[in-house]
Image (cartoon, rainbow, N blue to C red):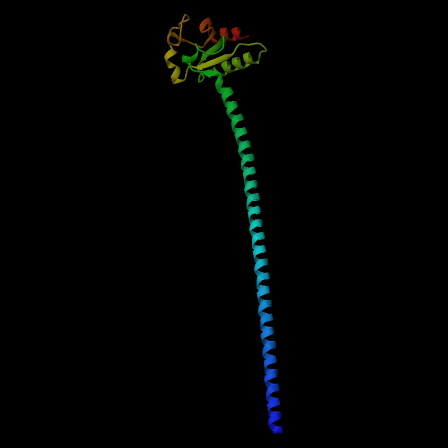
Length: 201
């Protein structure tokens, strides 16, 4: 009986140790699963936070790049439009003095001069110089010129000049001519290079 009692005690001890080991293992596995779960939560939270911060950084970088591109575009366009406008103004200023014969009677100025000459002729530069010299004077009337070589002005070329023309349709030019207009009518009519040069002095 003693043996049976010892056997029972040993068996009980083994079962008790076994149960304790199982409890420890269960507690350890519970702790491990809790630790793993806690780690997962921490990792998820840090990943979420790092993802959020990465997204915010990307958005900020994209916005900065777009802002820089916008500013560069505005700066370039402003510079080129300014250059373009100033070049156009120069062209306009140069072209403004050339008019068509049909508009010679209806300029906005009260009094003005119109020089009719062939810009392809050998002495064309002489007339260009006369205009420049006249415009350089402190006091002068607006002066325009009509290119007789232009096909749009061919209708006024004639073998005889008409000094009494009342409008552009009656205008006839025989040679290089300077006309002073006043209030839409002819006031002075000067023909020939030397006479024009004297008139403009």
